[in-house]
Image (cartoon, rainbow, N blue to C red; front, top):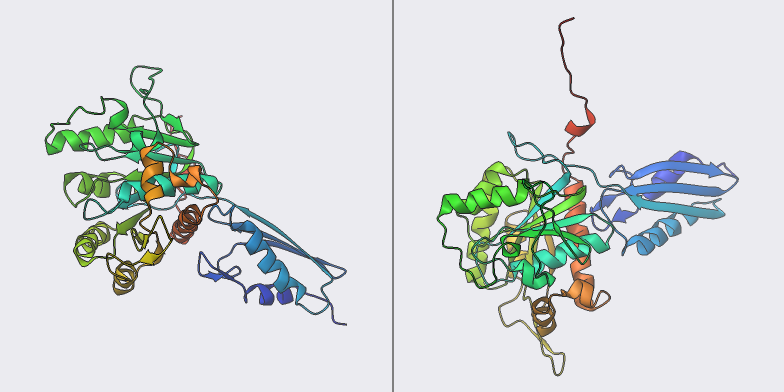
Length: 363
């Protein structure tokens, strides 16, 4: 029998597609090491995105393909992940302590963007990443209520503030600093300055991802973020109805104009689930988010139902992903999180932190 070679193993792995990165493991350069000895094959696979929930299935799929190689008696797959920093807009420097910033946006209010933002952040954390969330809605901050936080952040040096820890996330919001019922009667420049301060004066601690929950629209706050904040990618949230899709397209085009990659579209309130009988109905229309993604050549990341439990759990300060981590809805959020992170892992990497500063001295 012919000896098994590395080329045989690579040829087999080229036939296995990563369902999240949507390319085979060899082309995606996630196969880091191959060892072959006496019919035993060991493969080390290092993903560019956290995948705790998908790891058993991915490992089993790769192992099955390895065992199909003639002469292979035993196969072992070591699957892990390493999250890198990715490039941002030209002329904007990455922030210390934050590898990647993901903006979650919608052109229209009322589509459940904040709910998607917090569950996406929690899902990324459960999948194995270090995650923070910044509530960028200065006029209507909702993350304190959704995270169940009522305390104010501390400042150790009088100049910067410590993020609030909640459900494994590092969080910051203007809502932590003011009373819940106090209105923010501020003009645009004050709002954009407050957003920059919340982002840059918070002592974020080695985050793989910072999810920014943007206010709806394409005004001052969104443009400030798109032009001054180092964003690695954006996620667009919409509902299936045409009126929401019209505004969501504007948000998508805004990010394209400022060279921020759109990682994909999430369709929220895709179907209504009856709390009594479980019947699902497309009350806001069907397939709008998928169609929008196809027409704009961006990935469709997933569809979430209109379910009373999502509202009840976020209102109570314990979003679905932590309240019911193995529920169907939580698993959809986790699948969306893997797709977001996997799409980001395909973007150009940022190597600036790996190069030393060159200092020229007169001697």
